[in-house]
Image (cartoon, rainbow, N blue to C red; front, side):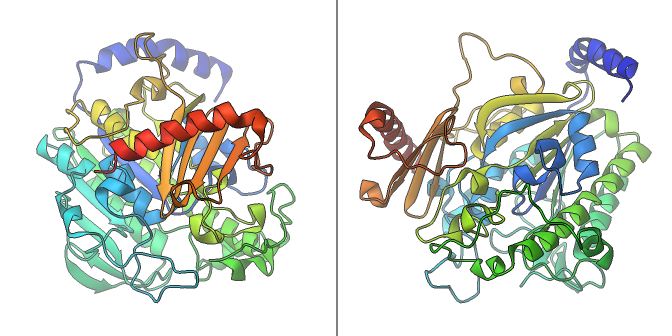
Length: 456
């Protein structure tokens, strides 16, 4: 963007924001990756993974640089994103899988029966006139069946396959021929082309990329990284504590090349969605959000994967920190960046506020950050509290903008405490350091209160 265009865009933002108060409710497109760490994107500082389209989306809007998953596991955190509820509340506390468990055991075979009673964004927006579409990986049980007021349903079935996947199209099983990301995009575009300006819509495009397995992507993406060394990625030799995914650590650089290829392949799915919105004349009133279900370690700490990558399970920032990009013409500032600490459980109330629909009374711990996402400053009466929480199986986490505590097995340990300002890569555990006793006990108290209040 030229300097003059940038100044015009930013100067006009307040006027446009005021004007939009009287306009129709926005359309909402949520693009979700699977296991994509924030640090892998160019707009978040990566120098080796090519993501020009996601970076362009960020330049045209605002990115939250401290957004964290509530759980470092896809199914559990995906459910939190869409319900605003903690894993203890909605009941999906791990990855849903029908495969044999590993050693150490991982995975949850099904959500609890009560999960069908959860209210998702699609339920709430659907009740207020939105048409709702879903394309991609569901991963929260009953994948074949359209649910939660999604009028349009295209969901991945069975073991993931990037080539010739099995899908559910509005409840009917179809054997597709083609490359999974492109198939998902094609179905999402079809949904967009059916929309009109007289009714708002919600579209969730849920990609499997860049999650392993790493075979099945077009050769051109592998070719891009054939000689890449990933010297700036921060990977380390395999840790003795490596668990799930440790097979990928045998040749970390080779695996990083494949993961980068899967990420760039995902990046190429962004333009068709934006083009479809432009062609329908819907882009100006559409909020586009890009995020990921969880982070991923990609060799950092000598581990590969998410919370299951180590024994005991980990709650490292690299497994929790996800991209959160908001692009909403006239509402989000151009090239915006905010450092407030937010969680995936804050997303639900934020989208509700953006759509001007009431947040259901469901004992939600999250808070809308719409003011932040649109470049504003929270009021002095309700300042933003930079403190988030997480839980994964027997581990709980509390993190503010400087310190982080991880408590396992109800406090029996092993426990961790990090000074993230002095030790951003979480290398030195200060839990038993007397100098940090006050910080440790304060965060532990906050964490215990959170767990007690939001367990049901």
